[in-house]
Image 1 (spheres, one colour):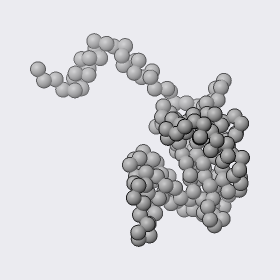
Image 2 (cartoon, one colour; image 1 turned 90 degrees about the vertical axis):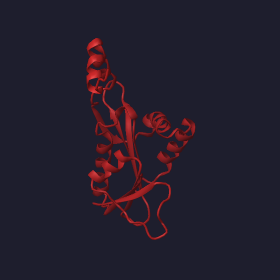
Image 3 (cartoon, rainbow, N blue to C red; image 1 turned 60 degrees about the vertical axis):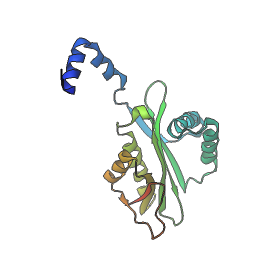
Image 4 (cartoon, rainbow, N blue to C red; image 1 turned 30 degrees about the vertical axis):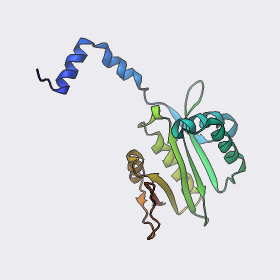
Length: 185
C-alpha cells in the first residue's frame, strides 16, 4: 500500500492526537528579553556556558578569556551586549561584541551567538541592530565582520541588515570557507 507522507502523518496523528500538542510545547514561546551592556560580575558564568555550548570549548578557558576581555579592554575601542530573558531570574540568551581595529571608525562585529533553543526568534537580529546603532552613535563610518559561508542563516541575516560581501585582494581569499562582509553606516 502506498501512502503519501502527509497522509501518513495525518493517519499517525489521528491515532495519537496529544502528540501534536506535546511537540508544540517543546519549543518555548517567543521570549521577552532586554538587550543591555554586559555586566562582568553577573554575566560571566552564563557567557562561559553559552560559549561552551556554541563552540565546544572548555568552560574554564572561556571564563578566563571573557574575564580578561571584560577587564582589559578599552571601552572606547570595544563593547559587549547581551540579550537577557526577562523574569524572576535573568537568563543570558545571546551576545554580540564589537571592537575597533585600526583607524578611528574601523569597527568589527567580532562575535554573535544565540542559545540554540532561542534561535529563529529575532534575538540575533535585535543584538546586531543594537550593536549597529551603538556604532553609529559612536561615529563609525563602516563595520565589518567575518562569517562562515556555510552558515546560511547568519549570511542571510547580515544581508538583510545591509551587509555586502567585501571583495578580497588577489591572493587574499580566505580558504576556510569564511567571507568578509561590510556595511556602511
